[in-house]
Image 1 (tube, rainbow, N blue to C red):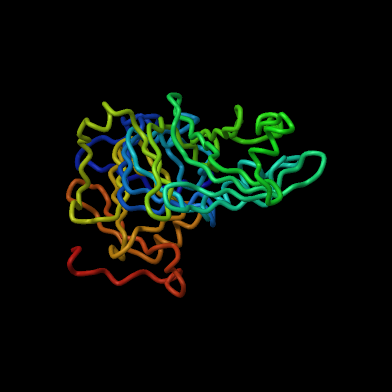
Image 2: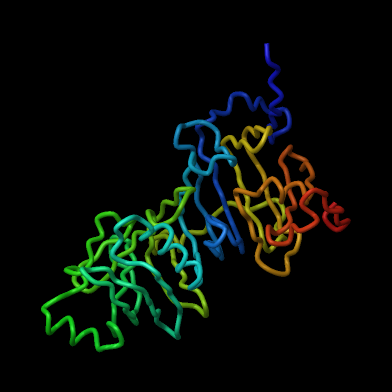
Length: 317
C-alpha cells in the first residue's frame, strides 16, 4: 500500500488536533501585503481581516486557489491604473465579441481616465474621464464627466444620435460588469481571478496612484478586531488562525501560522502560485504553542535565492 507522507501539525501542545473539524473556517489578518492574483494584477492590501473557508468543506488548500474563499470583514485594498488595465482587458472584457478592447486606465488627480476601442458596427476610439463611487449594493460606479469619441465631444455626439452607453454596450458576456444609462458598474466580488473574494465594498477613493476599495460596513469597521499575531513587531505579514491548512505536503491542524516579510522596508509581495519558491528562500521557526512563524522573501526578489534558504536573522530568534 502507498505510504502517506503528509505531515500533520497541531498548534497547541498536548491538544488532540485530530478532533478539529477540517471544515472549520480559518481567521485571517493581513497588513501591508501586495497579493498577486495574476502576474500583472496586484491587490495592494493595506489591511484585511476576515475568514477563509474551503468551497468543498475540507482543508484550505494553498496549492489550489480555486478551492477556497476569502470572506472579508474589513479591509482597505488598493489597485493601480496598470493593475486595473490588465484586469479589465484580461478578465472583465476579455471575451470573444466584447464591445470594448485595448483598454487603458490611468489615474489623474481625483478621477480616472479610461481609453479604448468601442466596437459597434464600426470600431471607434473613445476616452472617458470619470469619477468613482459605490452603490448601496456595494457595486463600484464609474460615472463619466467628460467623453470623447474619435476626438469629438462625446456627450454632444450621443445626444444628437439619441444614444447612451447602455444602448451602445452589450455586456452580457462580461464578467462582473453592467451598464445603466451612461454609468458603468463593476462588481468587486466577480471581476477578480481566483481565489474568490467575498465582501461588501462600502467606499472607494483615489489615493495617489491607487484606487482604494474600503470593505466592511461602518458598524463593522468601528468594532475592534481581536486577532493579534504572535509577532506584533512585524509591519508586513499574513496571519492565519484556526481551521485546517494544506500547503505542499504539510497539513496544519488547528492552524496558527504567521508569514512575515524578510524585507520589512516595503510591502510584502506574495504570489500564491509561487509561494513554494518564496518559502524555500526563507526560513521558519516553531512557536512555544506549536504554531509557526515563517519568513518569506518578496516574490520579485527571489532571483538567485529561489533555491536557497535565507540565513536566519538573529533578532528573530
